[in-house]
Image 1 (cartoon, rainbow, N blue to C red):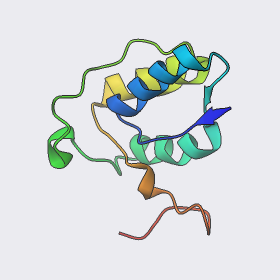
Image 2: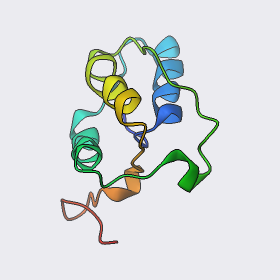
Image 3: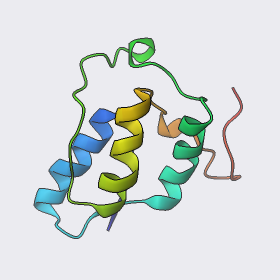
Image 4: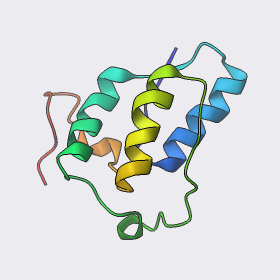
Length: 96
């Protein structure tokens, strides 16, 4: 079972909550990889730009990919990428 949401603190928190109910759930790498690239390239937004200032930095979810890749990068960059950034029907990102 896989989970994919916005690459932000709340998205990670949802994964953490789901992990308590579904211990085998994992972050969907195929969905998160384009979001990670956008974050690394600076094609992301500040939390204040999307009224996400009140989100709390996550520490762990129990998912290896999330705990070792997603969370450290989010905590370092302090920027978010919404999943709508990804164009799943045609591959690549959606036009701005």
